[in-house]
Image 1 (cartoon, rainbow, N blue to C red):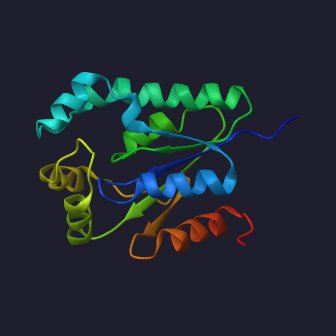
Image 2 (cartoon, one colour):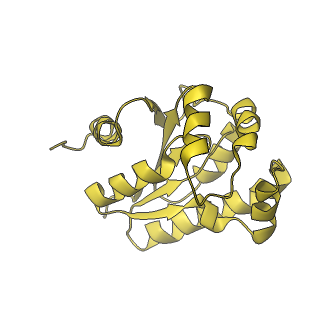
Length: 172
């Protein structure tokens, strides 16, 4: 019997480095990666681009689409890495329903560090004005959730090494 597919959900608020870390992990592990933003319907992107926070009704179909994509990948024997804010436990509960083993990696940092990162990035629809809303919504991982919290002050390579060590992968 083949081992269960593994899924890493790289979570955190905007500006935490989810995409950078996911891309590095994908290269190191050879796993397929996806951006949760790609699963948003156009209406959600329009709302956020206008500086309007999403509510739960906006998020449920998006979360189900991500969960279902992870499940399809697992059925095809593929492990995945997904970037997703996954701010609330209820959101993570939906993602954790995907076929396979789901582990959350919470990239965490101070509001000042996150705001500075958001100011200097380009090409993203999420304006820095939504950071306070995300921070107030964020529910940190609970002890009974499969995952780990990583401080974002280290370099991306150091963060990836820490994640791999936690997961039991050899770090070269």
